Image (cartoon, rainbow, N blue to C red; front, side, top):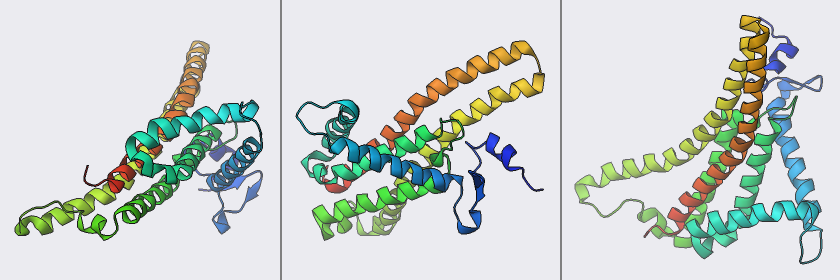
Length: 248
């Protein structure tokens, strides 16, 4: 059955529509989620470029909004989990946090779409984090990072421990991807269920309850959008800290 683009757009939070602004470029792999990934990147480039051009010791305007967020990531996420070695990876952590945050927020805009509700997007972000985790460990510890993956155990247990440690390496990015994807979908599903009550019961009292409940869920999703960007960045910092300091 062929889908009506308008019907698909009603559940744009959960379904990656092939149509955006009347264009269907899905044959080239460009869907609505891809558009909003690009939009998030452009927004970040414009905002950060504008903020970085402001001069003076006292932040104002846009810089005054962004600096507390950036300092929070540095002082409460990177330094406690990665130490001074984490400062060289600070631009990556800032980019990761802000990009996920903007993607999450764009899904709350009418007509927008949550790219991070697509498991392919969260998997790509998790793979990037995984690469950075391994790179940081190899850069700091060299070959010792590889040889130190398996703790000192009797030789008979070494193959088993190697398998366990490799599974652990793969499980970390998998957990990052699934956690972000599931949390960004959960609120949208509840929202759709609440709105669906209107069409199911067709009653004015139900309309009032559904609308009030939907507004409450939208307010909660604002918090979830910020929280999930923080959680993804925090866990990446924790895993990078383990790679940088395996002796701990």
